[in-house]
Length: 218
Image (cartoon, rainbow, N blue to C red; front, side):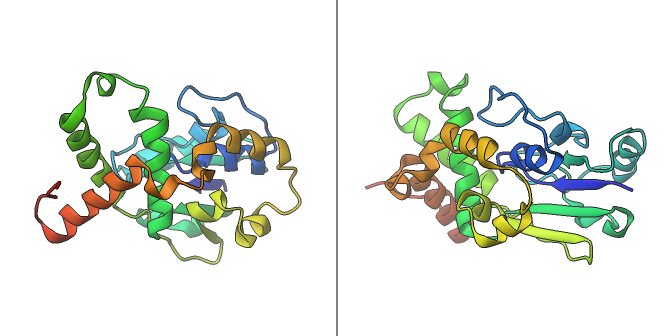
């Protein structure tokens, strides 16, 4: 039996694995926590939500792991394809709300799309078009899954340090891990975040998808 945390990329999976597994991992190059535990259950990823994977491959990988009973194993696999009853405990970092999806896209935008090639070689309207098209990947929700051993928590609840998040990590020392994560993601706490280019691209992408027509800049 295993404890797993399921999450889409850029939703603090490394942070939560560190806190619950009582580890303090190095920072990664992508603006996250480079936790060993949060990669143990990964068999791939998707540009949006990883909900099309080989469940046999995933379960086979888990069966070969030799981990402590208090270890929390991370994966990008959406657990809706699995029988969650086969695990001890399951935590799902969901993005069912607009706020969670926005936070996720903003993190990806800042930590990857502002720092990596070929993005740094694209400018003006070509850049805006590329950002808007990529933002469409983040419109899809990582949905909750129900089960007596399952806890669903929205990514926004983690960012905003809600009571639900505090209940989840009660009894764990989170001060060092959380303060470090907030420091490298300080843009999420900027009062002007909702007027940022990343948010504008998200809403433009959402409009195009919902109306099935191109956004017109004036």
